[in-house]
Image (cartoon, protein in one colour):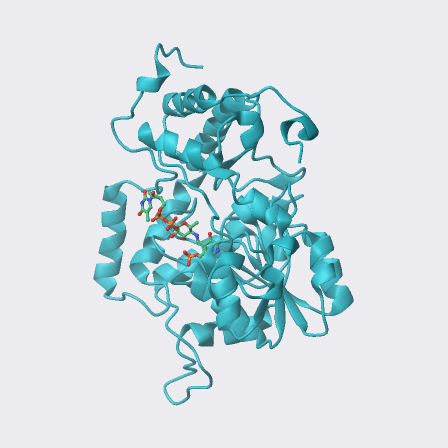
Amino acid sequence: MTNLQNIETVRFDTPIYVTRPVLPPLERVTEKLKEIWDLQWLTNNGPQLLSLEGRLLETLKVPALSLFNNGTTALMAAFKALQLEGEVITTPFTFPATTHVAAMAGLTPVFADIDPLTLNLDPARIEAAITSRTRAILGVHVFGTPCDVFAIQEIARKYELKVIYDAAHAFGVEIDGTSIGSFGDFSMFSFHATKLFHTVEGGALVYPDRNYRQKVELFRNFGIKNEEEVVGQGINGKLNELQAALGLLVLDYLEEERRKRWAIRDIYYAGLGDVPGLTLQQDLPGARPSLQYFTIRIDENLYGLSRDDLYLELKRHNVYTRKYFYPLCSSYPDYKNLPSADLSNLPIANRVVQEVLCLPFFGGLELEQAAIICDLIRSKSRPRRYLPPTLANPN
Ligand code: T4K
């Protein structure tokens, strides 16, 4: 813990954001750009893209993948390949892209509640939501914590459903040595600048069944099969050579970034682990963590301050945390009137979304800065004397 006389007066000179991208040395980027300039090949399946695809197959330990210009179009490609009609069971606690893509593919999202520990779809609630119109389960490995993939696999087998995972946060996650991308029919990874591994904007679709490749890549390129044939609908989902080249470089710095994030995590655990009312993000046994986010949950009654108030307080010190994923997808205008969006169907998600705060978490955050953030959070705590519910609130 840092020795700070008056923590209230601390204000970082420059803003501390929730994340910062890994940026390889500029000289190496320039060298890479020269390769691209020499070849005059800027996009459309160039050598940088093919090379990145090869490196990612190894890194992610998956049999097949296709690169995209962002994670959202990669997810769209999964739905296009599956051609489903009916309902898809999904989580309300996610980034808007997840629900939007399913709805824009013509499916009705059916929200199921989440597990209070993993913050991912609760398999029991998935099963309870199945109807004769259910065609798929769309899970999200929120903050890199794996869904209960084995239970979901069993439900999918029993009811003959497709499984699509939004693995936007789960780069490098493994369960007992098996890549997270090995589960389900499709997994989407996001390579946005805010992600541990990034290509500025970008993404990948992973599919254990290689037969999907043709459909997926046709969708990525307007449905064009060759110069003579356009065989289906598609969009421009291509990752360009400059982005692929940057991705190749970023891969070289990933292990270093992961080591730095481990150290920051250790500081957060040591500095915040015993603060009443705070629950720190935990790894699941056997799961290799993504180190994508570091989240805390705030129990206002025990900590003495709400999540929203802590968020505002930290801003005063120039610390910009994030309230991912507030508001719930089930509260958006397009979805709030769905029967499954009702508060009574989603009590845990509605509580969790008021409690989660993502702390600054990136390799460039100095350990001293992380320690000060812990001190700030500790200093805001105003534990109240516990009153049994009946005394605290006679009603
Ligand atoms: N599914 C899930 C579960 C997702 O979380 C996401 C994306 C997707 C699907 C869709 O994948 P993509 O189609 O995006 O590949 C950011 C990202 O834009 C978004 O990719 C990400 N999830 C989401 C969780 O975060 P914002 O609006 O919160 O980002 P922004 O611009 O506020 O950036 C956050 C902080 O990062 C900034 O305060 C500072 C830092 N930053 C950001 C950028 C862009 C930098 O230091 N440099 C930068 O270049 O959405």
